[in-house]
Length: 136
Image (cartoon, rainbow, N blue to C red; front, top):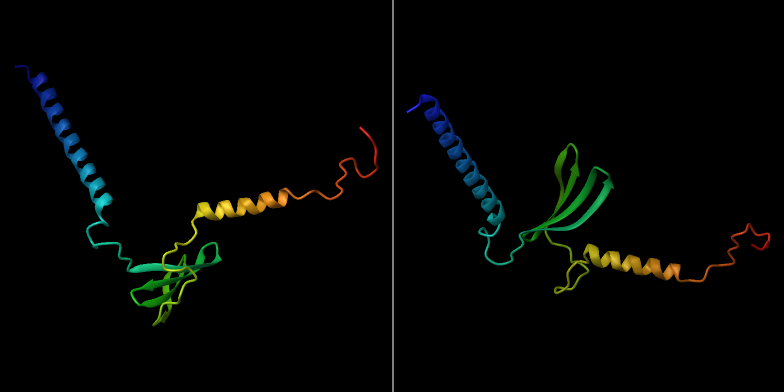
């Protein structure tokens, strides 16, 4: 056999195996990321809930978090995250137990309906000709 041809065959085999190993690695990484949160708990148990967020500036905010039966007030800034206060009880929310917080879609519809009701009102004496009463 030609040593030149053997070299290209070995190169193709090595490159093919490298491709197979990388493809398997990417598939395993995808599966781990996809199913990572599903095996830790049984049922819909929420151990950590964000109760409220208050933005102080574009990069700083206060976050009230519920962990088990305790509330923690956390400060978030570019310098880091720090615990500011701890409360023994979780404050009651305004929502009933079966209700969920309004999502973006419902808030958008609500605000659009408010905007449409404002536009439907009859305009006050709006004269587009500068108020001189001139005709076209």
